[in-house]
Length: 539
Image: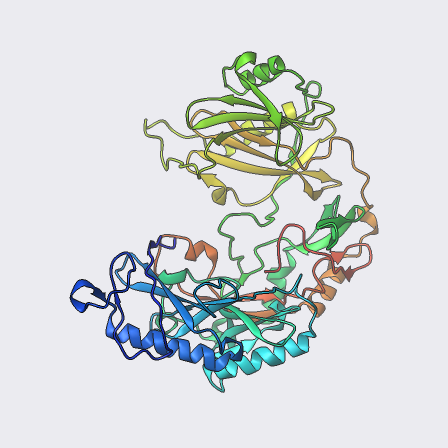
């Protein structure tokens, strides 16, 4: 994990670009004239700050009148500082402003320009012009070779151009420069984008070991490995586009599609999938038969809410339950305070009273801490045992028409200490409906249900396209790889970066080329859609 920074802020005014008098700071940031009463800013860093300001002004002409400067010094755990510089036209005028950081050597790094009159919704600019302006900037900033970065069209769109570091002639997806260009052709932000290597704790590029590209399996072998990941799935409510006027997504009719249902990366040495860190991808698992029992559960009074809390192991009384409206669903909400830290919440549909959600949450909305092992030494439930309890809850509270479900994701990534989480999706004709889901969390010590959320489930049977009318898997695979061929790249996975192992290294991977215009394939036509991916962003 990235270590937390202890933030200490010092402020000073740099009267001229190259100040001739030393800059001194007290601990509270006050600038003193008397040298004896002040803490001196290290001379070499004073020079680096001045030189960095000079560099950004040379490369960005719109900073010509930015003469007032403020420093923020972030004190890191290793005793070094991260320095951020904020430029303004005057002390009193907070906008426009320009903020940039220095790397470990004191060179300008990422930056952001806060315009005085920001462009509403970023007016369109021809992407070719964006690329041209961004490329010119990269040559100014890094030199004629652009520091070994190369424009990456797969991750660039509209006002943004992304450049990826090249190693051994291959892109290394974790090291990037992402530039934003406004309609005037000015570069107004420089960020890292994509898969960051761990911030300040990231190893230097020269300390990483990159395998010889010759060690990769052939493209034919990689395509065979990829083929098993191209599968059918349904969306009952596919996203079609974002409506700028209403600020909401617009949805289409139910659809049957082909999609590569994995983390997007194949280890180029082994042909195996490179796993996601959090298991949020759509790894398919064996279908599970379910037998719904009883009638639909409804809650319309605090007495009925108390009875449902009791069914989940929470003793409550009607008079202790607060009624309200759920911020997320606008449905009715019943809350029982367990103790000063935790509360149990039931959410229902406001009109019908249909039970939709139960969960135990931290009242202060803090990140809950989960024990890594049972402090009393009791044997925890296995994932399989937890699954059985989750299925029992699904049969009791879920839709009565659902007869088959599929657990989505990888179990070992859904464990959070003593809790095991499951995401089940409805299955139709043996094919998962990826946006028709129920999520359930089980306490692996007590076996209790800690969360059951059914916001995205269909309560009535769905009418979906006939899978017999889909194009063959062979035909779909051929078209998929023609439009989005496999590319050999270097990559360090989130599973490594977010682990406690500081010695992670890049691996050779094959990945299907990303295209914002070719995202998922309509299984009935065998042609790509331009709609947004539902469960996995291309970024």
